[in-house]
Image 1: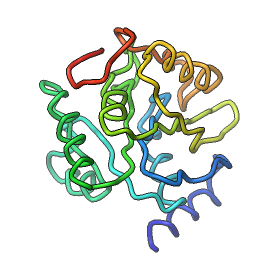
Image 2 (image 1 turned 90 degrees about the vertical axis):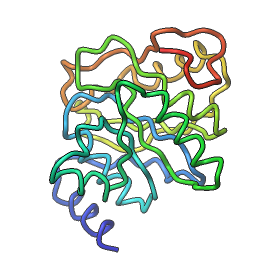
Image 3 (image 1 turned 120 degrees about the vertical axis):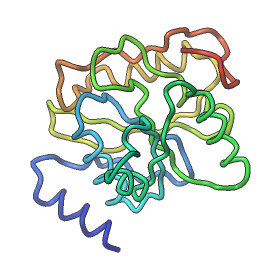
Length: 198
């Protein structure tokens, strides 16, 4: 397959290393963090293509306009209207419930740097669909990127986010100075429905 060939060539030539974590055995919500550079996207494509993962990804709607829009859609992009992000969450949940099963890549810290909280869409989608989350990462200190462990969310938001914070505590991102702490704006005890959370 052309995508896998491109990705494997990238990893052979790159100074970066692909993490040894195995490919998930079932559909999952991939959490892409820390999100500190446009290179995050390149490394994520190289990871998923190398492992042969069928995935979609959420991105701001401005990425889907003009000539670049063809590329972003061809690589599995789903545009997010920032004026109505809950509508995207509901649409993705409905796709999964209709039987369209795929991996979904979400960068919850949104724009690269400057955010104090993660967006909660990844959490709401995972809880509403019953999909686990797979913690993906980029770590400049070890020059390693790829997939981390898979985690079944419990619905106890604070406890789940503590687990996520622990995993990302030593992950520096592509540009470490832009790294933030994984934290939702509100971490109540339940966040099961669209429209709740940060």
